Structure formats: structure tokens, C-alpha cells
Length: 315
Picture 1 (spheres, rainbow, N blue to C red):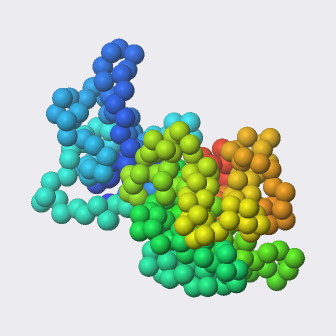
Picture 2: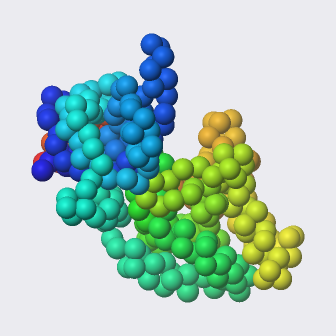
Picture 3: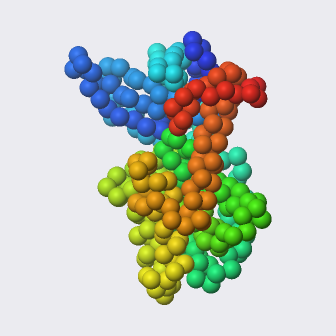
């Protein structure tokens, strides 16, 4: 059975997929249909199920496994599955949800162990205490080690946020000898906590949706609130210079305010500038890697970059 990433336009796909997103909509003729995002271990593909029945409305939902027969087409340079037949999986199909989940290349356990080791590199008592206080909360720790870094753009798979954080830490450690003027403790803490608000913003590691807080506030501000709570619990003054610098790096990590990408303030510290570009590098290269994965075509479309990119190492 082919994986989603291995299909090309015109191919027939026949196999099991996971419903990752499901939205009920009304067509121009008044009939109802499902706008669906389906997934397997290689990636996702969008589809529409027209003229849905009452039974389908009642039984189809996110995180359900379905057996699909359809034809792969291209719509706005992205693959789409034209469903011909679909049904829920049956017990006798013997399909487990774990086999359909896209995961980080390195196991969650290995990534978590690496993160814990790098935390010990932090020499600042204030930042060390703050980071450990944040991670003491079981719900935060569980979400950090399982949720994706984003819904669709980069590291959009199980434990993707953890992989992103650890990759940033490892990259920073390699670059510190080249930029010895940077505050290492501040950057390592920023790597770990810059997206910590996503542990509140996203609801589920397998089929994530935005929570009410995520929709209304967003992960950057949610992260600052979480850090403020941890600082208070740890007895760190709200005016502590290291705490202020950390929050500045987080609030500015989406780049200059006039770019319109969500930063609350433009970077005003060397560490903030350094981290912004480090974060961008990892996010964009990961998005490109996901676009190339399992794809034999020379040119593929990257949703994050919104353009075609060339695969010099095509399979």
C-alpha cells in the first residue's frame, strides 16, 4: 500500500487513513459535505466527501480511522484526494492508530533525555530555577513532549515541538563558539520556552485543534503568562533582569513588529536577534524536509514558503 507522500497526480489510493480534521459545510446547492484532512505516517492530504448521509454525520469524527478508495489530484499545487468510497475501519482490519501517526525522526524518549541534559548547561540559578519550575507542571511537560510545533507549517507531527526545541538547543550549542559575546543561558532558556504557550494553545497531539485560549490569546502571550506564573512560584522578581531579557526574546522571536508575524516588540538584544534567525532556520528547513519526504519529484510546492522548491537529492 502506498503512503500519501509516495502518490502522484492521477494515482489511485486504496488504504487506511486517520481523520485529522473534519469540518461539516454546505455546498452551493444546499447539500452538506465534509471538508477533511486525512493522514498517515508520511503526511496529510485534503479531501471532500460530498452529499454526506445522516449515518456519516453521526459516525465520522476526528481520530477515527477510515478505509478510503480514491484518486489523487492537484488543487492549487497541493495534493487532494477525490474520494470514491470510504468507510470506518472495522476490528477485523486490525489497524492501530499509532501506525498512522507522523512522528519525529528521533523518539520522544531520546529527545526528552537530550533536553534534560542540555538544561543542566544553564549556569544561571534564576533561569535554571525558572525552567525547572515550568517543567514541574505535569500537564505542561506532557504537552511539550507530545504536541506538534504547529498545525500545518513546521514540525507538524507527534512530538514535533519537542524535536524543534531540542534541535534549536543543539544548534545554539554549536554556534556559541562563533559568537562568544552571546549570553548562553538566556538563549538556551529561550530555546526551551519560546513556544511553551503552545502547550495551552493546542488541544491534542494526534489531531490538534486550537483551544479557546489559543484562538483568543495566541501562544506567545500564553507563554508569557505561563512564565510569569512560574516566576512567581519560584520567587523570582518580576523586575529581574534575566527574566525581563527572556521575556523580551520570546515576545520578539517572530521578527520585527512591522513584518506582521505576531511579535509584540522588535528584537533589541543580540540574543533576541540571534534566536529569531535560529528559529526561522529550523522552521523553514524542517518545512522543506517535510515537503521532500517520500517525494520523487524534482520540484515540489512548500505551503510554508508559498512557492515551489527544488529537491537536489530527490529519491
